[in-house]
Length: 161
Image 1 (cartoon, rainbow, N blue to C red):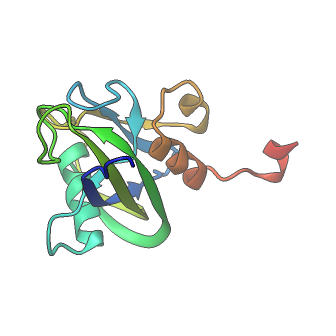
Image 2 (cartoon, one colour):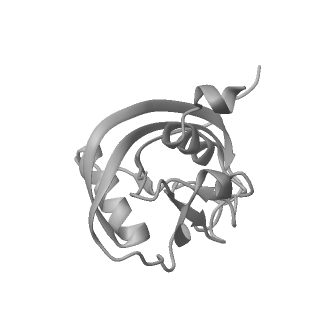
Image 3 (cartoon, rainbow, N blue to C red):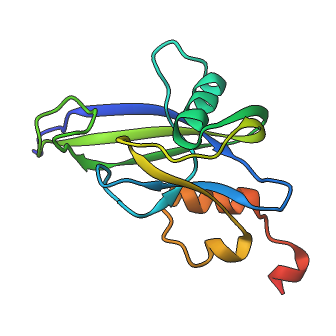
């Protein structure tokens, strides 16, 4: 019989922000993450008692310096995998401990209403930038980044041919 791994569940909220020039806002993962240099949607974990919309907007400001307004709920995604704890992560397990990790990801369409684009420092992302549909084709994206691209730039009849 295989021993059961400790379980860790994370609920997070993310933003799909497309500007007037049809560019998608993405954030680059920093060296403290599993995929440094890969791009993802701005967002992250919801604090205890925090409404998911408020969490998404807080994370947008923390990671990109921008102020947003939630327009609509786009998707809820669930991911389950085995994860190994690292020294600086927030899992609360000793480094090297494997856990059964479940992430529930709430994704909103968010309109930018203020702020100035800037990069986050000393956290899970280190750069925020706008990308066109063509630009994202050449970026290393995590799964959530790919989901964001699909939601931001749905296929059209002409692009499906």
